[in-house]
Length: 131
Image (cartoon, rainbow, N blue to C red; front, side, top):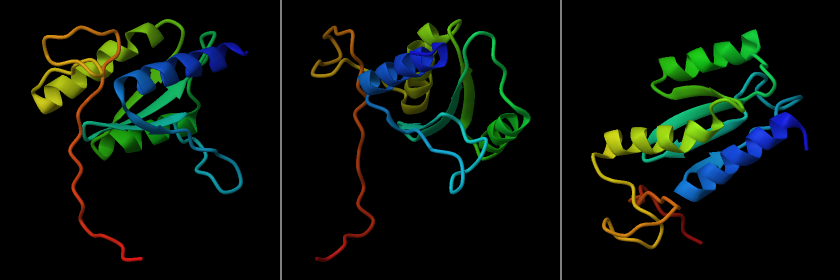
């Protein structure tokens, strides 16, 4: 496994553990070049995360995408071996500020303890599709 793949695996583990929606866009012929490695939504917050390893820096196109995300009100992060362990804390902190509530462990109440964190989400149906 490459060093960057190890960072991506750790990011995936955090996202799965806290119950975030995420996708990993494929760039190339039909993709958006420079798109972050992870597109994330949690508690109404939009994140773009670019993973790097071994001191790698985002390209100019990746930085432009990060600027576009920030201008649209999202959060853009660069994650590498030096800060991947802080990602969980960062995401949970933003979610708690946004929702003004505590993120609790999966299957736990606010008094329970768990290594895992899940955010309860409310789903609104704007329109249903008839069969």
